[in-house]
Every structure is written in C-alpha cells, then in structure tokens.
Image 1: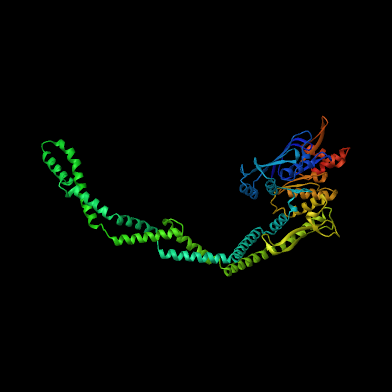
Image 2 (image 1 turned 45 degrees about the horizontal axis):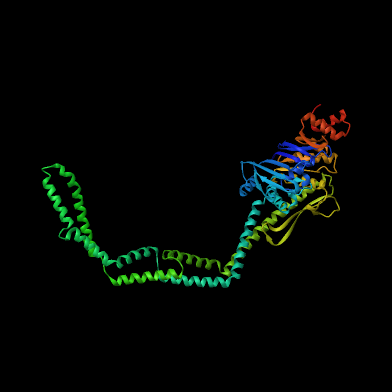
Amino acid sequence: MLRSLSIRDFVIVDRLDLEFEAGFTALTGETGAGKSILVDALALVLGERSDAGLIREGCMRAEISAEFSLEAMPAAQQWLADADLADEPGVCILRRVLEPGGRSRAYVNGRPCTLQQIKELGTLLVDIHGQHEHQSLMRPAAQRMLLDAYAGAKELADEVARGWREWQEHKRRREEVERNARALAQEREHLEFQARELERLDFSAEEWEALQADHKRLAHAASLLEAADFALEVLSEGEAAALASVNAAVSRLAGALEYDAALREALDVLEPAQIQIQEAVYALRHYRNRIDIDPKRLEQAERRLEAVHSTARKFRVTPERLPELVAEVKARLADLGSSADPAELARREAAAERSYREIGQRLSRERERAARALSDRVTDALQTLAMAGGTFQIVLAPIEGGGAAGLEQVEFQVAAHSGMTPRALVKVASGGELSRISLAIQTAVTEVAEVPTLIFDEVDAGIGGRVAEIVGRLLKQLGRRHQVMCITHLAQVAAAADHQWQVTKRTANGAVRSQVKQLEPDARVEEIARMLGGVKITQTTREHAAELLGVKR
C-alpha cells in the first residue's frame, strides 16, 4: 500500500508531505483547490508522461516521491529482485524529477531507472481509475489476468504459457533442421569419418602416459645401462669400491670402540650408510639385469607415437586432447541422431501442440464460465450506479493458432446505457462513467484483485442522492481489502470514508498554493456540511452532516 507521498514545486503545490493509512480515504475540497493535482502527481511518479508546464512557476524543477509497503506483494518484490532494484525488504520508494524542457529522471530505491521500468512496477502498486493512462483495466493483458484470477485459473494459464513455449521450441527446432538438412547431413558425415579415424587409433590418456615413459626408456637404454654399470663399479665392483672401503672403516672402528666409546658417534653414522650402499648395489644389479636394449620395441613405440601425433595434427589438437575429442564427437553424433531427424521432430512438435491445445481448451472453458458470471455481476452493479440499462460483457475472441496467453483474446466491453452497442472499455469517453464501471468491476473481483491501492477520480461525476450513497458504500466495501482513495464532491461519498483529507487553496504574495490536511471528526462535520449546504452552512446542515457521519452533536 501507499505509505507516503511527497510533492515539491508541482503545479500549484510548493511543498506537501502526506502519510496515508489503510481503508477508504476521501479527498474533498472546493473546485479548483487542487484535488486532482495529487492524483496527477502520483500518476507521474508511477510513470505517466511528463510536461515542463507541470513545474511550479518560478521553480527550476519539480520532484515527487512515493513510498510503498510491499508486504503481501510477492509480484512487486519479485519484480524488484529481477531488476536488481530491491533495497530494504518490504519497502519501495519511487521518485520522479521533472526538469525544464520536459525532461525527467526516474528512480527506484534511489537507483536510476528507465521510464518503462517505473511504469511496469507502478502497475503492480496502484490502479488509478479515471482518465489516466495508468489504469490497468485499459490494458488487454490486465483484463485477461483479472478474468483468470476470477476464474481461479491462474495456474492453468501459467501451464498454457509453458505448453505454448514448449510447442514453439519444438517447432523452431524442426524448422531449423528442415532448413539446414543438407548442412546437418554433411556435418553428420564428417563426424562419422572423425569417429572412425579416432576409433581406429584406439587411444587413451593412460596409454599416452605409458607410451611416453616407454619410449623415453627404450630410446636411452644404452645410456641407462652404462650409468648403472658405472655406479656398480664405483660402489662395489671396482678396486677402490666405496662399499669395501666403508665396510673396512666400520670394522676397524668397531674393533677400536672398546678402547674409546667416543667413536660410537661416528660408527652410528657409518653403519646406516653401509646398509644403504649395499641396498643401492642390489637395486642397480636388478635394474641392469632387466633393462632391455630392444630396437624392435623402440621402433614399435616410435611408430605408435607418430600415429598419435599424426592424428592429433589432423584434428588440430594436442595428443592429450584426443580422448576428450572422441567423447565430443560421439556426443554430437548422438545429439544429431536424436534431434536432427525431421520425422521424429515433427512427431514431437505435433505431440506438444496437442498438449498445448488440450490445456488451452480447458482454460477456455474456465474463462467462458467466469466471463458469464463476472459479466452478470458487473452488469447488476451498473444498474445501481446511475447506468440503468447498461451492460458489461467479456468477449472471448478466438486467436488463430493460439498464443502464449491461450486460444482467445479477452476484451472487456461496456454499453453505458440501454440501446447502446457495447464497446471496448478503453473507448468509453466519459471519465465519470469509466470510474463507475471500474468501481463495479473492482467490487466484483475484490477478492482476487492483486493491486493493493485503488484511486478513483471523477467517480461521482453526474450522480447524486441514492446513487452517491451506493458509490460510497461500494468504496467502503473495497476499503476492507484494499487501500482506496477517492476524489469526490459528494457528501454521501465522503461520509462513507474511513479517513478524510481536505484540499484548500490560498494566495500568498500573488502566488496560489494548494494545501492538504487530514480532518478530525469535528472538522469532518464542517466539511461535509459545506459539501451539503454550499455557501451558507446552517445548524440543520451540520446536523445532517453529523447524521451522515454517524456522530452525535
């Protein structure tokens, strides 16, 4: 709901800071005092087109900001999250700055945004019923969504949208395959050739590591044997072999140990060395016995290496990438086998279309049922709103081929009086009639309507007496589930409000200023009396006003 509205230098308003409450609020005041300016300011901050003439005379710019509570408004919260404009949880602040030349800047939660963004968000926050572009009921999509909500078919509508997307995706893929059949056939042929080449090579990452190690060893077998022989010569087989020298040193020191225990430290170091040299000798003899100088095996390894490198060059990859390439080629072939068959794709497309149409027909039946019930309900309401003989109907026009929203287009049509041909709601010319029609619709769908704040302008145009009381009662009824604001000249409508704001106009230093204040109970009696009695307010008028308000004098 709308928490607050701040206006700076807008038309005849220099500075206003208003805080709003839940329920039904009436805005009253003399003609020309600036009541509609408040609605205009709110419409502007919600994305309506701006005009340099809206800046108060003598000022450089105008600024309007509105704060909304988003509790129990998941759609608005999700929109902010998707647009990366969320800030404090459960709160949203819109701001619009008008500059000379008609330029304007828009902000959501302090961050710059486009006018289209603020307009999209605004449709989730406020509905202005009158002759403002911001009225959601003028948009076909909003009419369709309202009907679906009334029918309890929102989930079914979402299912239809998913079915449509799935069908169109299958259709797109089938058409793409048919357009590119020759290219796909060539790709498949090329991939099959690659697969045969790679399968003949029969190469793996494990083999590559082993092959490189084997080739390195076979290619340097002579050098390796020579190195092993040299080490054995130095360690154990030569005249001055290290092992014999160490053995002699250990023996001599062990014999001398009984004369001086201090030799133990040196002996403790030499004995492990003696053991390690002996183990090295054993390992070298074993290595020398098993090392193989085999030219044939070396030739085989070199041929295998050349085959691997040759294949890698052909496919323009490193040898290490060949096993990965095999997997990629096989995966692509499998994909082409399952998704590039036009006949199979056509079968899938047909199945998706049948599924979509079955769900769409279920949605159509629900819409037809709800359209009849809602049309009757709104038509009945029109008879009590100075539109005797008026009719409201919801037309479901079939869409050839269907669409994401279903098999038909939804349009609200109305005939304001008997004998008139129903026309699209958007073509209703009278602001007063449009407001009352909107009031009748909103009252009928109040339990499913999602926009939390409803503002009615001109709803009392051309009515009075009994009809005014009915309008006031309907607005109060709406106020139990929504935040409702109404600009009114009728005492019967204002008296039904939970809260009342008075808009006045004053002149200071030759400039006109508009002011707004919330009325306490006694002040409400005076304002209602003014609305009833005109220039001269009598005690009888005040008593009548108190009676309308249900207060004792």
